[in-house]
Amino acid sequence: MSMQGVADEDRIELNKDETKIMKLRSRKLLMSLIRPIRLRLAVSFTLVVFSQAFRAVGPALIAFGIDKALPEAIHSQMTPLFLVVGGYLFAALATASLTYSFLKFAARTNQNVLFDLRQRLFVHAQRLSLEFHETYTSGRVIARQTSDLDAIKELLDTGGNEMIAGALYMIFTGTALYLLDAGSFAILLVSFIPLWFLTRWFQKNTKLRYRQTRVASARLIVKFVETMTGIRAVKAFRKEKDNESEYAVLTEDYRSVNAKVIQLFGIYDPGLTMIGTVTVSFILLFGGFRVIDGSLGIGILTAAILYARRFFDPMEGMAMFYNAFQSAESALEKISGVLEEAESVPEPAHPIKLDDPAGHLKFKDVEFHYSNGKTVLPGFNLDIPAGQTIALVGTTGAGKSTLAKLVSRLYDPSVGKLELDGVDLRDLSNLQLRRAIVMVTQEAYLFSGTVADNIALGKPDASPAEIQAAAKAVGVHEFIMSMPDGYDTDVNKRGGRVSAGQRQLISFARAFIADPAVLILDEATASLDIPSERLVQEGLQTLLKGRTSIIIAHRLSTVSIADRVLVMEHGEIIEDDTPAALIAGTGKFSRMHAAWRASLV
Ligand SMILES: Nc1ncnc2c1ncn2[C@@H]1O[C@H](COP(=O)(O)OP(=O)(O)OP(=O)(O)O)[C@@H](O)[C@H]1O
Ligand SMILES: [Mg+2]
Image (cartoon, rainbow, N blue to C red):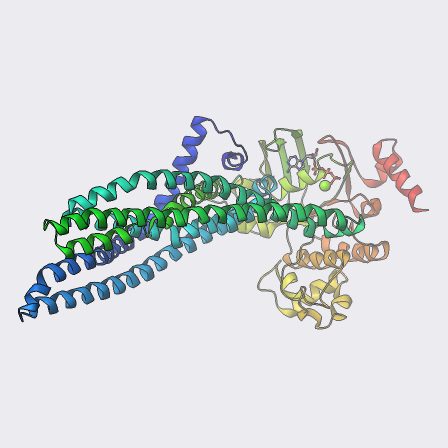
């Protein structure tokens, strides 16, 4: 189990080893993405080389046309001129069609890479255990799936193509100019000095500003998400006005850094044009003198001017590449962190099969601490015979939910083991585990879909009759029938909205239909009113029959249906007996029970 990746991107300072591990991890991911498409990449590269070569051929043909073909045409020898014009048109056509093929091909390849990465991230993040998700907030998982993937998309869609095409174009143009006229090439070389300074300045500033825009946009998103997810608290405490002004400040920050980015382009673009223009004028001046003294053909001068004019075209895209590359690199590092995260409750390679589990649970010298190191269960032994109904009570933070999470194997014990019918939970397949042990929590989440779909979650192949029987058993049938479309009501549509208590009832039906050997209810009746709870309790009797069950409840009314009460304190069982015996005694439970009785009147 490694929580390495979780920690990485939260800290600014990483030591050398951590940086090395992160780079290796990210390179490994990159290789695994590239390997399946390496052939396509080779094709893309070939296409782009040829398209840029043809693009650089034009001016040279013009030079030949003016200096060689034109004089011959004057002497009625038209063939060379036609050849030059034909060649020129052909080069333009070849450039266009090759560029088209390259862009189309590269786009398809890039989209495949993104598709692959997106899928892998979803599948893996979903499979990771609860431990990961309790540490790595959903906001961060969302950021991996959205802004990080966007950064990579940005690089693949534009940055990468522009960089490669631009670099090749400049190399071909430079070479052609050198071969045609070394003097003009020398002037072009000199122009590299201001170009270098201007580009460095631009890169340094855009890097800074882009980081600021990312920070500003992240802050905006966090504020927005926090406000909207906490909208009830916002309204209850009349926080709207404060939020408005805080949000206005954040929006202003975002606006102003974006304006600054645009200003940088406002300087860089004309700067490039200036350098290009000055270079061209020097080539014209210097070339002009040589044409006059006859050492340079006028066609070559024309070509040199054309080359120099177009030489700087790809610069802006290339200067931006570095930024896109850096964001994509850090995004890949973060994504690789999630993908490398190991499951903390892995499925066994050779699962043991339990035919028709009875539900005998046994904790053997179990110790448990969460990854923050705090010990919650210090040394735990417990035997729950099959079919027993347990009421688990205790103060807030005693470790009741932790125990429930261990039984349903959302976590594994740090030391010792937990057995179902004598088999270590770690040796059961996920499928078997989910069939044998079901936990219902206070959360009672309903997924988009109909009420029937949500109940059938407990048994995907359930018939409508079974679904109705389950709903009747827990006493929610009448309510469902009162909804606009009965069992076919969409829970996300108007009219399909259900209250917290109704949600819990539906999740009871879900558990009932699953018919597990072990059932855990963690505060599962907390949102019900007393009459509904009483109704559920009648249903509960049916629900609990013939299976092992652990009921965790603050309201002690459930205790009456239990065979055995466990009182938990600081991760240990301090009392363990029948409800009647405990109530009659003088221990913690009898005091809790007396206080609860008093609260009822
Ligand atoms: N994901 C977690 N990471 C770290 N510590 C945790 C985590 N979940 C719970 N704890 C800690 O473990 C202890 C036991 O928590 P648990 O949720 O099991 O208590 P509980 O008995 O169910 O309490 P309650 O009655 O309030 O539901 C608490 O001290 C809590 O702070
Ligand atoms: Mg709890």
